[in-house]
Amino acid sequence: MKKIITLTCIISLFLFSCSDDDDYIPVGSRLDKDLITILTTLSEDKTLSYFILPESDDYLKIPQDPLNIITKEKVELGKLLLHETALGRKPKMAEMKATYSCASCHQAAAGFSSALKQGIGECGIGFGTNGGDRIINTTVPIDSVDIQPIRSPTLLNVAYQDVMLWNGQFGGTGTNKGTEANWGQIPENFLGFQGIEVQAIKGQGVHRLLVDEDFVTTFGYKEMFDLAFADITETQRYTTKNAGLAIAAYERTLLANKSPWQEWLKGDRSAMSNAEKRGAITFFGKGKCYECHSGPALSDKGFYAFGMGDFDNSGKAIVLDNAGFENVKKGRGGFTKNTADNYKFKTPTLYNLVDNGFYGHGGTFTSVRDVIAYKNNGVAQSAEATVENLAPQFGTIGLTDEEINNLTAFVENSLRDSNLNRYVPERLKSGQCFPTNDIQSQIDLGCN
Image 1 (cartoon, one colour):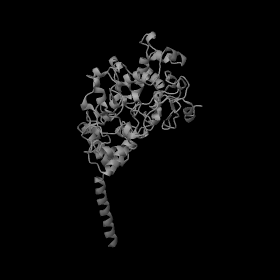
Image 2: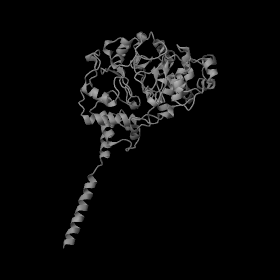
Image 3: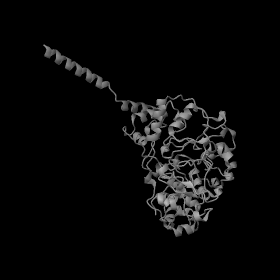
Image 4: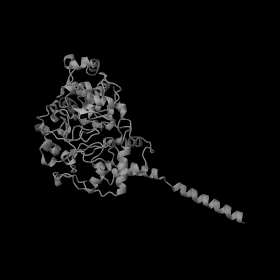
């Protein structure tokens, strides 16, 4: 009799267990379903593909300037030119010739930004492992140092912008339509290119780089220019403008398309942890992050004021007298002269933030979590930022500590593409050290 009762209990237990298993949904699966529901609601085409970054060689899917169609030849040339220290041919200090490049402040190891609060081009010394050990050469006049009055923005995902810089002043189309009266110091805008192209052209002069026929022939770039710009007459082929167009084409391919978030979107539901998935749900839901950080690059084309501090609030920064710092601090308003734009700055992409180490246009934060907590609390760092211009999300989202932790995990881990070295050349035509080439950098980078 006991055996019959025991057997009956076992069978009953088995049946009830099976019934429970049928209704059981693993935590990860439930989070995946919730996240998919949110994303398809937000997506313009109601699919996850709306958020997916294209492959870097799928040029037809990458947003591009119709006046600068992306080609393999341009990309290959631009890849070298962005890192080429031999381009440093217009230094203020003769001894600094050929020691710096575009990538001195936009290196892959720092998420194509600078691992410093304030990037240093000419007159910098050293590099370290990711650029964080670069310092100013104290033996030169301070006004000879190529140092900017605002933090170096990343080049990742810039294909999804039509204007460049924190105030968006570079770009002759789209967002900057109607701002022509303010282009006096930016004649390159009148060429009609988008911001990436304008910055790549203008930046060569600003950062003391020089491309001409002498450079092309001396360092072996002639054939690459010939292939990339075969439709342009040879007498006009080896120019700063064409170098800029090649650099811009390459920059458009710098996409963080191998990050865990991108892998999850493509179907690998194990690519993110449960905490990261909860963070993503907060990002696209209660946190209101997606109201500014939208689309595949998680950055719209807008400008917002969050009252973050500037270099004069953050300490350990140098602002030269000719920097026009009062306009710099006003962000978009400093360019448009419209008071409604004052203290508003362009929405940055959030990919590979953790590789940089400094956050906010003034580098006043050193952790992603602190930025999220700051926006949650809503107490402005800058005493100058006008209250009426502050973003409506500032201090109004009411996140808990757990939600902040999860959101931090999503931004730091899920949005980090760990293999940006695939975008870095193995060597340059010049054979020189890169992305910096002073004596200490050669030691740091193992070039000597």
